Amino acid sequence: MKGYKITNCAQDKRIGVVGNSLKEVFTKGCQKLKLDGVNVTMMTLDGTVIDDEDYFQSLPAQTLLIFRLDGETFETGADLVYNVLAAINNDTLKTSIKIKSFMNENIKEKIRILSSVLDVDHNKQNNLLSCSLRSKDPEWFQDLDTRAKTKEEFMFKRCQERIRSYMYKTKTDMMKSDFYLQHKNCRQYLDEVYKQFSELLTKNKYHGYYFDRSNSNCLCDMTGTFICEGAWNQSVCSYERGTGHKINPYQNRESRIIFSTWNLDHWVERSRSVIPALFEASVMASKVGCSINMNYFYDLLFTTVNLKLVHIVCHDKGQHNGAKCDPSLYLKDQKTVNDYVNNHLKNDYQNKKISKIH
Image (cartoon, rainbow, N blue to C red; front, side, top):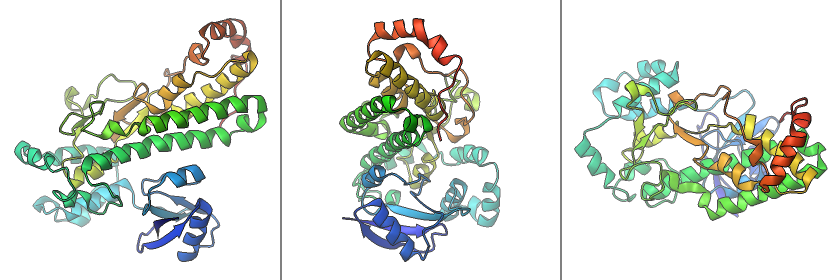
């Protein structure tokens, strides 16, 4: 049995609860917060909805859970940055009311400006970067619900949470879709590939090393500086004439918080392209009796083969036209795929759509 912290959208109080399951904690949380449980959504602080038992069980003890009624909003990214800025001892930020008003609109542009404000003297930066232990830089760990003893350990777990959320969102989108519910023959292939996803992610520790500056495979340099990789249809970040957005979340608490607004963006979109492609692959697999190419879809969903680290300004949420999956890589047996594509794909897929995800 694990303990959790719960709060409402106003975050005016925090209450401790314990429980073994999602249902138990949700029920106790509603009782403690005096909510009737109808039209209530439980989520993490970053907005991830918790509606899956497996995902709930993956959350560490003392995770802060927000209970939101439909129509309510909780602290946004702009409010979070404002609160941090209002606490900084800096003459330029004394007029906190005006700053909050300034942050209420055009958040992407404002964060772009704030990135330059957070630049510090290189000597000061190097001194701060030498402080990885919680005991050496306690301010960096302020307000964090974590048992991590070092910055690297915390950043490793933060990246794991992002990759883990992709796994559970994929599972939810698949299993709640009309396609999954209506196609029994395809369902077994989808269940098997999801099981393989879970096993490989566990083996790879959910790729937490992407944010861990002590790991040779991280996405930052040895000091912890991350560079934006640019919008999905760009090869580099074009900010400041190509110098690109940069940030070092290891530097200070403010930079760590702002880094949470950076995204691991799917170049080939997860919901619009990869999941429908998985459905197509399951149809192909069921017809020819061949396994889905798990490694291909795993790379698209969970690795930097298809993930780009981008500043919020460079995160284009519009449709990524032109970034598509390759049907020739859907199944394990290359010859079987080629034969199927040549003989069936045009007739099967060009004139009808796979059911939409709901």
